[in-house]
Image (tube, rainbow, N blue to C red; front, side, top):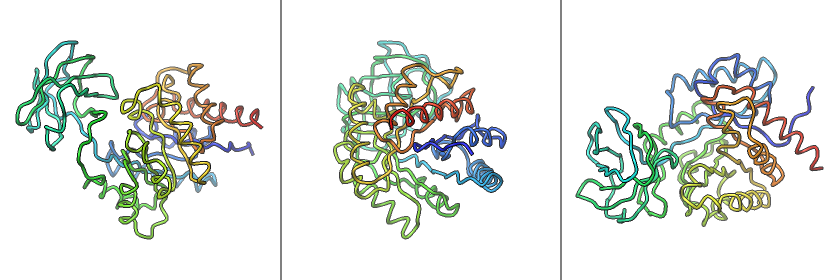
Amino acid sequence: MKKRAKTKIICTLGPASTSQTVLRNMMLAGMDVVRLNFSHGSIPHRLERIKTIRKLNKQYRRSIKILGDLEGYRIRIGRLKFPVDLKKKDKLWLTQKDTIGEGDLIPFDYQGNLSLIKTGQLIFIDDGNICLKVIGRSKSALKTEVVVGAKLKQHKGINMPGTKLKFSSLTDKDRENIRFCLKQRLDFIAQSFVRNKDDILKIRKFLKNSEIKVIAKIENREGIKNIDSIIEVSDGIMIARGDMGISIPMYEVPIVQKRIIKKCNQAGKLVITATQMLESMTENHLPTRAEATDVANAVLDGTDYVMLSGETAVGQYPVETVKTMDQIIKFTEHHAK
């Protein structure tokens, strides 16, 4: 039997990793945990994937774990008639009205007080690919100017770093998905956009005496500030570098990552390093040298898990990506002794 790596691999499932054959090959390549992203997909699709994983576990005497990743409170662009090409200096209205967007009027689903969003605030859309600046407002809309343009598509996520918006940490959709996790006996639940320990305690109260492990996703300044108390009430931490890299300056992310891993190691809590670890393998056979180094450094820092997202969910080479990550982990662990 091949020697198992100490650092485990989490793989996000999606259209590229639906078939039993692909999942089997990912498992044999080194996959340890599957991640179900509750921001996307339907319940029937999730049930089918859970059934397949458990069938493979039984057939190959494995114990692939299942992680349910809650969407959390996420502001998104609404419905659009067509994708909108945004160019620098374009003017755009973000409206709270439930309408189909076109031209310079785009709906978004934030229903709170717009006065909390100040003039000059930067609004990042689609993981920072688009950046708008607030230059005015009406009763139900924000007037913005495009700082960084790109093609805007419907339902893309929105970040407003530095703005303290009031919202409940558990949405109705989250509660429905927690019930799903309980019924299907998943191994982990990850809560998005955790700000403080209360966000985790609310989930624990909902779970009651369940053995599901609760993972806090750290991806904003408030969560970083309260990391010690969050670690205390969580079973583990996910360093979610995607939204984190928008919420704080990019150059801070490496040091924040190292500090969180160290704190989790000292507290005896599991830690997951996530986002863009082998991103280029979404479309290429090989990773960049920087990506290989990133994975190796996370292993050397003491991460318990490294996570693949789009690489295995929608990428062209899901099996090769898992195999590559497994090779980097094993080589690094061997030479770090």
